[in-house]
Each structure stands twice: as C-alpha cells, then as structure tokens.
Amino acid sequence: MNPPEITIWEEAQPLLLADAHFGPLARRVGPVRVIERTDPPFMYLARSIVYQQLAGAAAATIHGRFVAALKGDVSPEKVLRVRETTLRKAGLSGAKLRAIRDLARKIRDGELRVDDLDSQSNEEIVRRLTAVWGIGTWTAQMYLMFRLHRPDVWPCGDLGVRAGYGRLHGLAAAPSEKEIAPLGAPYEPWRSAAAWYCWRALEE
Image 1 (cartoon, helix red, strand yellow):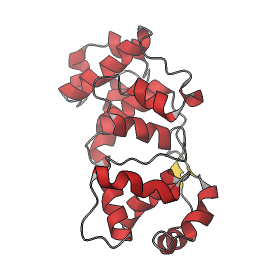
Image 2 (image 1 turned 90 degrees about the horizontal axis):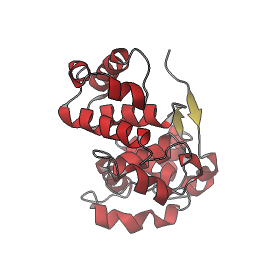
Image 3 (image 1 turned 180 degrees about the horizontal axis):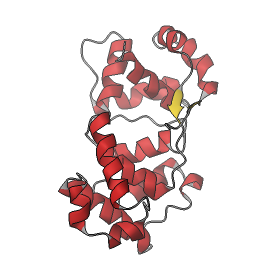
Image 4 (image 1 turned 135 degrees about the horizontal axis):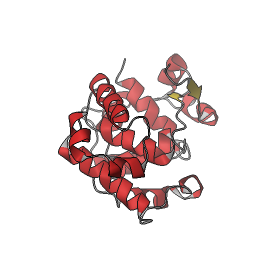
C-alpha cells in the first residue's frame, strides 16, 4: 500500500495565487500535495541515495531488493553487517553502496547525529548531511522539503526547478544555478512551494 498524499504549505497559496507567473498554474493544480513519509532519518536518506539519478520504476525495484537484502531492517547496524556483495546483488552501484555505508558508519560512530535533525536550522542540516560521501546539497535539500516539510528551500541546483521557472516566466532559456538564486526572493518565505510548482510546470 502506497503512503498517502498530504497537503502542505497551504499558507503559501495567497502569495503564489496572486503572482502573475505562478497564479494560473497554482489555480489549475491546486495546493501543494506530497507523499507523506515518516521513515526514520537513516531509512529515508538511504532510500534517497538509491533513487538518485534513476527513473522511478527502476529505483523502486532496486530499493525493494535492498530492503529485502536487509530483511526489512534498514538500519546502520544491519547495513554494516551485511556483506557488500549481497547489497551489490540487490542492484546497488558501487557509488551508491559506498554512500549508504558511509552514512551508516558515520551515524554508528557518532560522527553524524540525525536524531535531532528536525530541530536544526536548514543550514545545519545541509552541513551535516553533506559530510557524508555521496550526499550533496540537492539530496539534503530534498530531505528538508519532503521529509521535514521546510517551507523556504530554494534548490538552485535542480534542473527541473530552473527549467520550470524559465517556462513560467517566459524565458528563452532556463536560468543558470547562479542566476536563479536571487530570483526566488519574491517567493520567500515559501520558496519550497514555488519550487514544487516549477516542477509541475514541466508536467503540463
């Protein structure tokens, strides 16, 4: 059974509905809806690593095999006990296996604290998570947006956000990562919602 969808960032609607560029799309699509995920931090982040740069169906298959290889115990301790060859047979690439094991090792050894992430600032969470090999700023920002539902994240490195912003604003080309950084300012403190609508713009 798939996790349910929930509506978040409803307070962003007046700002975005009143915007000449986002308003028409926001009216057609409705408020922001996301899959509700309450996985513990390690489980969520391991899943994020598996899904990096893979299409949804392929990623879901590999993730299912990964969970099965761990017999459902997706924990740092179990990941570090299971043989690497077993996890590779589940379909993990060498890079993804390295990232998941580095995450597990850092949590187990106390180098990375994840039990209090929900009480930390966005900047602190990005700082902590990007200390793990294979977790970059984008993955950390997706954790902020879709696990913690932080409302003011502006993932400038996301090509979909940049392309969607360009489409909504009638630009000839998508803005670069550097160019789009200040362009989110009008949508503070609801830039996460604006980013979500940028992705939706590409689906139309």
